[in-house]
Structure formats: structure tokens, C-alpha cells
Length: 113
Image 1 (spheres, rainbow, N blue to C red):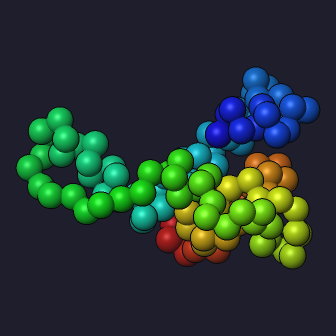
Image 2 (cartoon, helix red, strand yellow):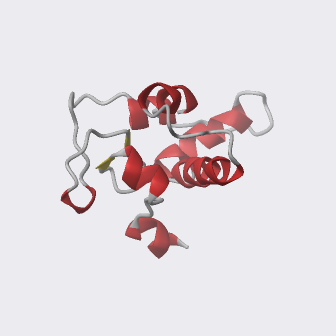
């Protein structure tokens, strides 16, 4: 995510405390999505901490950043800007402004808390 931000949004200073906090918050919220439960299980099964099978999974990089829909547009509040990420919770394409600056928070996440 950092490389993509540096390339696409050079005016966004990743090194400031506030921006680091925003990025960490959004990354953690995305990783909490149920779609990554098998990925997290895999982290314990592979080294042998637990003995279980795990389901196939998509990595966050593959799901959130590798769009099959070229030129995807932001679906948050009918924005229409070029999408930066696909939300792991609501599956919407979200632009940088809505995801990082305005801290996209899905109703789905709020309902799960």
C-alpha cells in the first residue's frame, strides 16, 4: 500500500504521525474482515502450532489491489474518482480520499463490533 500511495499521491506525507495512524487503522480494519480468517489460520498451521486444515484464501494484496475491473471508480457517495482499494468488508471500490483521508468505515464493521 505504501508504494502505491507514494506513486499515486506524492503530496501525502506517509511519515507524519497522523498519517501513519490512519494507514495502520485502515490496514488493521481490512485484515479483520472474515474473508481473511483462513489466511490467519494458515499462519498458525504452516509452522505447526496447530494441526488443522485451512481453506483456500486470497491475500489482501490480491483482493484489495488487483482489480479485475480496470478503471474501477469510487462507489462511496457516488464520488466517481479512480478507485484506490477494494474494501474487504463491503466489497466496494473506494478512492484514496474516502479510504484514507475520510477513513472509510463500513456499516458492516460497525455491526460486527
